[in-house]
Image (cartoon, rainbow, N blue to C red; front, side):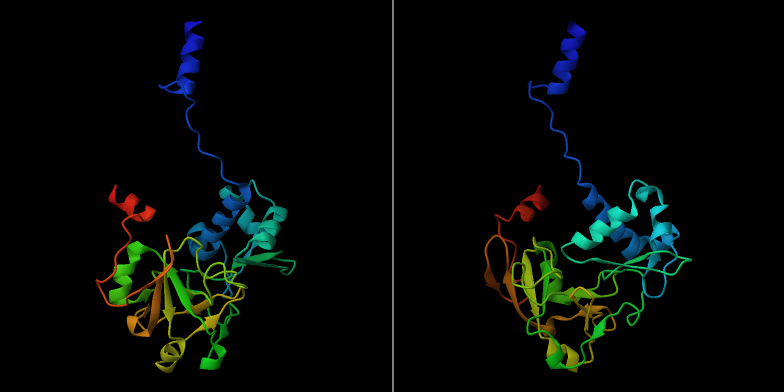
Length: 250
């Protein structure tokens, strides 16, 4: 009896309350994250044959250990229901079967023409709004150096803020700071812009992979409340009550 009671006490924890167990991740979310890593960053390391257009054979992908519990139907569902339209799945030839790729976000060098990126070569072709979402911890560096590709092939821009009509992708909904870009000025200085298959605006930045602060039009604090931010370096810091700030200080 004592042994049984001891097990019950151990399961409940030292205070008598049941110990918290982390909730299992939704299988579709797990699959989406695994696909993102494999197709954006890990294809070479995982031994996946990736074409110049970024596509890999789905059958080969599903043979990897991390994908063996998933089926073609699972992948199709994730592609169809992903709110940010991160992936493209298309029929292949009989030798490859279906092919899948990530629509953007690569750290692997995938050719721009093959990724079906539409060049935006005139000011009129650019969206009226070009905005990049970021977090407080990156803001001081961004003010000094500009936006960085951070090892990827492009900097991601959205044509509106989270919640705006028609905005599917390009910015995380939990971003704390929004930086608005003067696209025509950057374009005039030779910086290229492209539109991806799911509507994200992409730019490689300058030769060093940066979009310097000279191209910033304005900045906006998004969380916890929206308010304008100064673009002068060292004049803005994270709100003291920002949850992310508190986590950093702990």
